[in-house]
Image 1 (cartoon, rainbow, N blue to C red):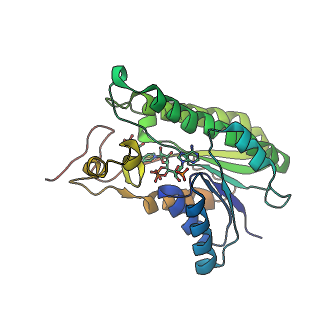
Image 2 (image 1 turned 90 degrees about the vertical axis):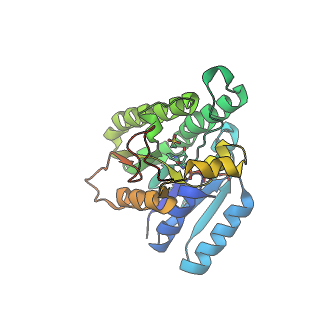
Length: 253
Ligand code: NDP
Ligand code: 8X3
């Protein structure tokens, strides 16, 4: 029987690409996000294309009651999650600290940090019981380097980096591996969300160079998941070839 893998934020971008990649390999998937139509559409696609076994759960990771109720109601079979991919996250706004919106800050902190913690806390007990498991956190180059106007988003990804280290230390005694993937610029809905639907501004982020595709990151997470039991790919930073750091990207205009 293939492992069960839970991916948060599977309705677009990296999470969706990973779901497709893992379904192809026969993994059983629990896919989550806030957009039910997208979850249903993806489930139907994975069933039609790969006869994949998929459970979808629609909830907001910021809502702790929903997280614990919904994940707590998984059947005996589906609660045996082998791999948790904490991928749901976002940037909201790109403004100097003095101009940032409180609502943006709260959304990023509540999703990227608190949401990741809620989901992890709901899943970890079963992994401890099983004496094995694998948690993969989606961090960012922004979790290592802060860039101008990135303030709170960068702080949330620094928190993900720190939580990854802490989780790894605390969970090692239970046979649970903890990994982190830290992408640079990936062309997904990320910038559209950051700029609140301003497609022109979002497009500019990826102009003049070839950004990563969601599939590039899915490929790397697949490698982490399929590494032998005794191997933990602990942290993996992946950048577009044209990106040297959080602030240096070689653009051809
Ligand atoms: P997308 O915007 O394409 O995907 C984000 C996913 O997160 C969606 O499925 C969205 O689903 C989900 N999500 C957002 N907020 C919530 C919430 N409150 N509750 C539940 N689900 C939520 O962007 P990416 O695929 O690029 O982002 C995935 C991760 O990768 C994020 O953590 C991001 O910070 C990180 N990352 C992205 C980079 C990039 O350049 N794109 C680079 C480095 C890291 P829904 O809206 O349906 O809830
Ligand atoms: C997303 C990459 O550089 O826009 O985490 O912050 S960046």
